[in-house]
Amino acid sequence: MDMDAARARMVQNLKREVRDKKVLEVMGRIPREMFVPPSSQNAAYENVPLPIDLKQTISQPLIVAIMTEALELKGTERVLEVGTGSGYQAAILCELAWRVVTVERHRKLAEGAQKVLKQLGYKNVEVHLAEKTLGWREGAPYDAIIVTAGAPSVPQELIDQLDVGGRLVIPVGSPFAQDLIKVVKRKEGPVSTNLGPCRFVPLIGDGGWRED
Image 1: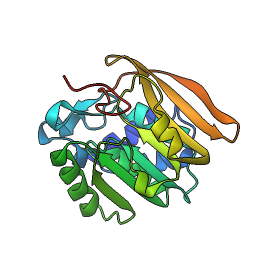
Image 2: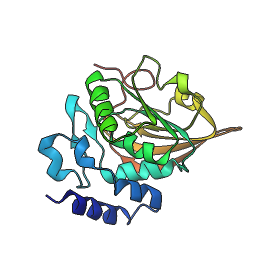
Image 3: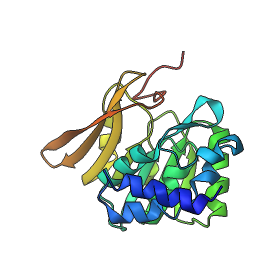
Image 4: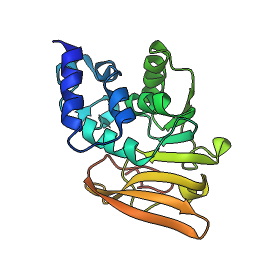
């Protein structure tokens, strides 16, 4: 399979709904096939979520693009990702931001993502095993935070880790279906915008759902 051609077709399809040229350019460069299991590589550029280890998924390209675009990255930001998963989203953030901190609760996924990110030469990223507290307080405040799992509500813990003017993009709803919410932290309080329906695996732990 010609992965370069498949990647180009994916970007052409994304252009129908995504306007940020930098996001599109980056997604046109990064080899998504390196972030999925060998059995799924032929579907790496289809607009569908794909399974990875430990019952987790790599999000469909359109959702990745929409969430990344909503962060409004200019290249100088410090960004937090909650839910490293395969590492694909982190790779995109590495290309668009100054520094990326990404946390993952599954050691196997964190180690796998770190390996691929290193193979691709990214040096502006820290991969951490998630602690009990949601996010990564040591690196706060962040200019942008992206959450790749669905929460029952917008966690105050993450808003607290945002700098004033910072953007948080997070799926909010039930464990089975959510709306994608963008929160901008203003001096007078957070301002939320609904970006539309989505579906993510549930966020487990503080600020999310119980593991049972």
